[in-house]
Image 1 (tube, one colour):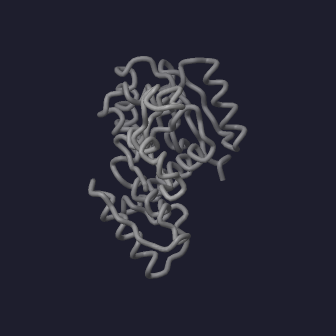
Image 2: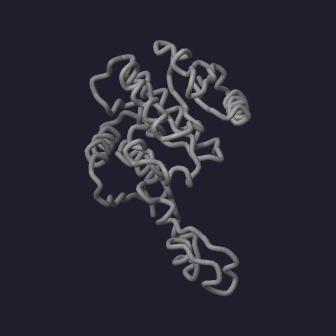
Image 3: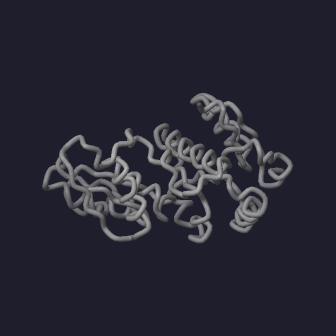
Length: 240
């Protein structure tokens, strides 16, 4: 349950900190400790903490310091970065890789709860000292434990380590997107966006613009620039 998941929120902007705390509490995450980049060390209770969320942190050097602190003192605690896409692009890639995941701002309920759920399962698996880094509980939404499901999980574990393009076959409704999301979340790209697109639902004349975007005035009706799905998924996963 969300309310049993203790969180540490590190946010330098007081108003933003209050707003984020209110959002977390509203969706059921009630055990929140608020801190800034100056006092977070005094507020950490590693044995009773399931995830760290970092909002506005100041400089990249300060963020590096936070990562180093938790790496030395509580490396099993997942760290989530709350960032806009613009801030994400400005952040050093080495720092991005150290985060468990990036949560896009403005917050999406489904994305936020999904990431916190995975962080909780990851933390639980570490507490139990699970032998595998791919604990079966991490495969969210893959219900069942039949031989076929176990084989799919095993394939995901193997393929997720690769950057190769993956072809997922199956009839409508069999869970192709579920498999794609699990591949993404278990890969080194998990901190980057997962962007699904149903090409069959897009008219042919709009497909190019949807995939690759366009600049303002590129054609009649293009009153503003539009980011394409390929650009949105940069560094992450595009599911077609």
